[in-house]
Image (cartoon, rainbow, N blue to C red):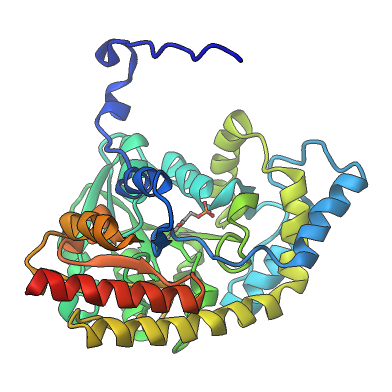
Length: 398
Ligand SMILES: Cc1ncc(COP(=O)(O)O)c(C=O)c1O
């Protein structure tokens, strides 16, 4: 048996950069390290579909291997995939991009987002984002040398962001605006009228817009509108999308960016020296997904819808007010009436009832008093989780 290696202590101040030392560890990951070490936990935690990638998509990956498709691709990604993305984005989002120079395939939306930040931000540039939000935005902006500026979304408006609130955050240093609809963690969506006002604001203040539309296929009500498709916006917008959520392909790590050629080229220059390209096997699978996977996405969405309806009613019945998310696969119940902080609630719930949820505070200060519960889990598991949570809430209150 190999001898266990000794943990070496180092002086972080000497070796770790100041920029990295200043960013916190993700609240989600910390929590899930604990969950991983426990048995029989029902997880409403990590934002990941419980479905396995549809078989025809997995088969495309296997077939790519069988054909010996094991090398690098172009830095921009496979042209065939870029062409299919262009067709899909035109059909579903009404935005036209040239596969030759306006689309870049990356290692997930995570990498595409990082590339966009690094390509656009100069030191000290302010980047506005709405909060509570996905955990990567503020650290990503800061690591690129920018200053993250949060716009808090009010629970009274089901956490939707308004142009007026964004306007208040604009200063002469504002460079870009990050949008995410449907929103992780609140499930908020955006009406066309308000999005038009936000677009007008971006044009007026000459802001770049980075729009993360990874949950767009998981819109349950209303029309999903992309800001990239609004008049005068293509020239200032980086549209980000990927395969992780819509096709249950988190492990394949494929996402993409569409935008003006000069921005995509700048992003590509970082990508070519850091990542080189996304895995060809994953790109082949993504091609199958985007060309033949729409029915799978719709089928999964209907299952998420049924789970959403169930979990939202269950929260309201147990006295945790919860708005109905119009998109994504997250419910965001308010736990303030229990008197516990969101971290304490999540920790005590896990210990007492073995249900894992993410404290709302992991998504920004406005998330305090809330819990993010991912309903990308089988309905029978959600039913048991809801029973356990109701028991926990009753005990805390008594
Ligand atoms: C809003 C949002 N953007 C981006 C990502 C990262 O997606 P990917 O798996 O494509 O890197 C996530 C993952 O949870 C997310 O919720």
